[in-house]
Image (cartoon, rainbow, N blue to C red):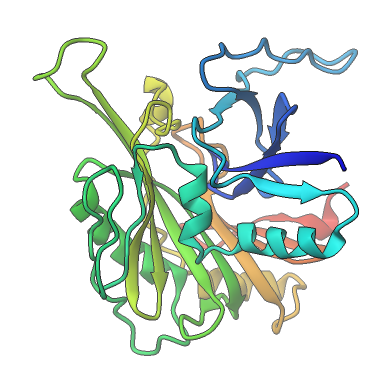
Length: 315
């Protein structure tokens, strides 16, 4: 039987899950539609694919993602014909609360944090134990509040960490139920020079996620490797980070979405980040999606709650 390996990685723009086949040269994030060139360990980046006939070259170069060196633990084995197995594996990869899937997607020099019940070691530093989420009602937590608290926790992991975005699932009324199925993480990157080391060995680089649940915050999937701070490698793009904390809450943004025609009882996923990550002057937005209903997708300004895009009206 033919066997294909799908390696789980993270989208360098929004942090969403992407699986890469062993023959893929270009992969596109299904969430933010960012296309990236795929490189294998020890191999140079491939030349960018030509644009479609009659279309100009893009203004910005395609982003590059490098597959981890040790991907066997996180490779998803798909056996042709076994539909049930495929469904189970897909659910495991998609589960935001599963730290095991993130261990497989990182390299040897990585770590996964633990909740306030103990520590889990890896070849990196000891994982940090964060504080619990502060909320009056853990069944109704606004992602904006999680973002504010996550920033404080991130400083315990890496003082120079810069916030780059966030992703939250199973929202009701724009709020998370941390006692239920809601999951959320806020992404951070850091890149700085260590003057005590020689040139070529002096760059300290990495990325990590602050994950939230009913027991608190977790340092989730801390990658400490070259290329993991993809948003900060370009000096011009690095000026766009850290991104500002939203002044329009997710609940307020959801009210705008409902007013524009989204069912109030719809269960949504929301990504919080820049409209275009490579521009420092771009707006921050809440991007709501409802599974199976692209007509309910909405982008809301995270500063003043204005509706930026109604996908039901797109041409």
